[in-house]
Image 1 (cartoon, rainbow, N blue to C red):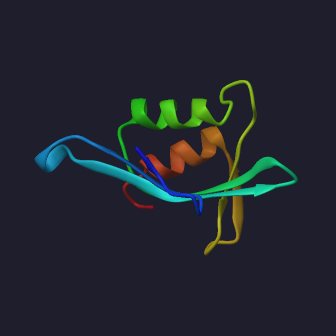
Image 2 (image 1 turned 180 degrees about the vertical axis):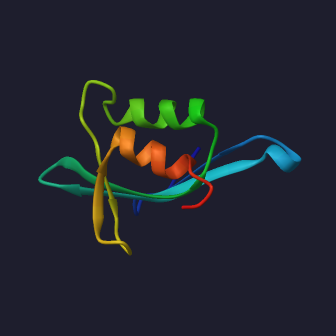
Length: 86
């Protein structure tokens, strides 16, 4: 995982055809993490590890799909993200 002072980050793993990468940006507000932008794909276990850094499963997370103008809870986001038609 790589973090930059401006809040950008990259996390990657795997080799060859199993290589994966998630990247994004961290935004703070009032000395707390306010939101995280995510892009990319990764195995479910890696996604669990990333969400745990954000307090999941104790903290309820909301996923905003900016282009679609929708918000999803964690379960709905996982379901939609695993759908090959999405």
